[in-house]
Image (tube, rainbow, N blue to C red):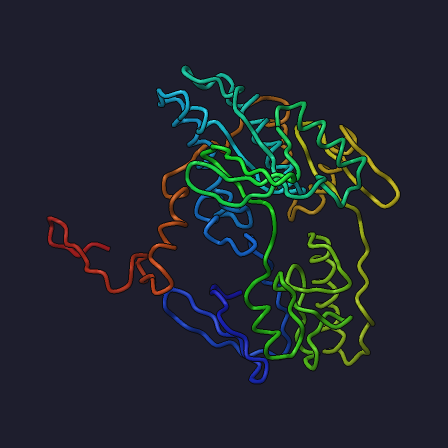
Length: 387
């Protein structure tokens, strides 16, 4: 296990180049599995990212937590009603499983967790809006479950607006084009983007060197055994691969990773390859709110409390380690049975760190002490050099 950001893959030389804190490393390989995943896609409007962060990493989650809690705190301090309304309006773009779950959690936060925490504002009056340009929500779940999810979101205070395409985003809100062609303005301080994904740039690197086709989302068209054309030693799995229109869900990545590892073990043992990769669809699930979810498992469709229990059990099953499972159950009990949540800390650094790093630009290089490389070192009053 080596820390570093992969910057290049050379298929001819069989090397992987990575960098960390200004140090570049070249790693030779005999077998390679590329599973760099995907990030948020803004469909060519990358400027939206400044005002509407996605949710694809721990850093993203910490930033969103800071923005959401910070919006309530600023609303408590505001005196202008228009500003309070802007701060207490939360917009989630994208009505897939991620967007539905995020909108539901913000509603739970506003209506249960924070309802007694402020003097000047009532968090229960918050406006939570879920937008999507498509005419249906949760399309992979079918019309029945999608409709049930929409009704449940409406019951907990989420406005679902379909056929609504976001055309611009700024600090104060969004411009939205409805299906009838009308353009309207929605003022909101907190915007969350959950409308699409873009595979890692490493996919294009692999496509250029191997001749494999790369689709608009940056995914590499792999062989039936998940390898690159002409390179049986390179497997591409997870959100980076394009094969038989497989969905970008965790089970595809888990099964693909296990398959690739097994193929490598068979090759090292001198055995014949197992055959093409076959994905076993275990179904899809999405939580809506406390005690409510939807699940599509084969021929069976579940909703409400039963689907929510299935979601809990399956997610517990895939958590690594007995201690982690017990800890998770205890956290869930506190969150679901009461109204308190322990993860309430947010810092200014979490909210603005991403934008600060982007402003420094690609030339920024961190020193071993964590600051900009080459920056002058200040001295303290004792004459010792500061770290």
